Length: 390
Image (cartoon, rainbow, N blue to C red; front, side):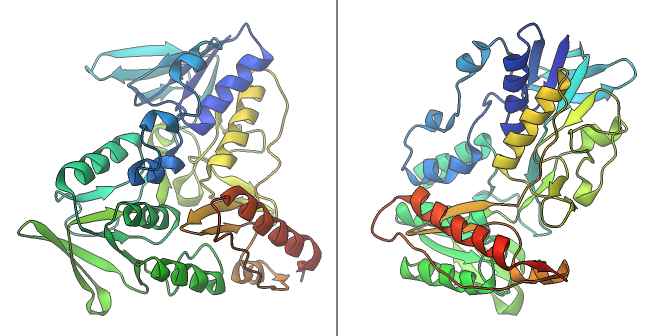
């Protein structure tokens, strides 16, 4: 049997590994758009800070380790179209050479791409979006050769705050600008205020409720302007305002899409097209508490969904249980985590939540994992004991 997988990140590689674990006779080929299969995109800020000196250490597995399991990697190849009737995928390499690959079962794990906000000047030198290994190399080159003294980060989510930590670590003055009234809108505002205090304690200027409109070149520097009279002159700009599912390939092949354009799948990770599965940041995810599909682009979720897709593609009958949207981020001496629903989300879903504010910090060590587990334990306890429907 030929199992073809499009995408070499968490979902795609997990699907490939699970399939070969269960059936050593299956022929597995993974089409990877770049030369960095199974890399930790979440670790990019630590590479750019200098805390991880060698970018190769961001690999969960090397390409050689993956191929040793019997998986074929087609690196630097981009899937251009899917012919579901003939069960073929057209791919093209860096030189523009095309070929058609046949499959019996297909797994789509194309992931997500950064949102391009409607900001004038995103194409200027010194302005970067940060999502891929190629993006990280461009930023690293700029940091090394231009030695910026200041930076504006547009977006105060996970990547934005981790990059604030990374650039402060390099001695760069940082301003973080977000649209929401408090930092990191994925957590409750009370915790957002704690994060803001931590940022300020380390010299980061945190600006809230500002919509950036333009970035302009002024000599060798950049001027960032937005609502409420915001103006900031800086040496470089990072844009990290979220991601959107990469599903053009799927939608043109007849796969149904839904929330934010993500591929619709059932709990077995099957799409509406026979013998085609999908998993990861490009699909809708079943939420355990909401009992409905939502869009949750998370690496841990992608890994689990990929395993389900890979197992079912070789004859299994597993279902993806669900996600609670558990997320963890380290910002300086804080480990910030969330799971389940925010207070406002719970109310909107018809729950009557009980809210208990409990901040756990690990300021005097770098044991992020310990602090994060404690926070998740408290959050899970609150969800299980105090969240009641209606």
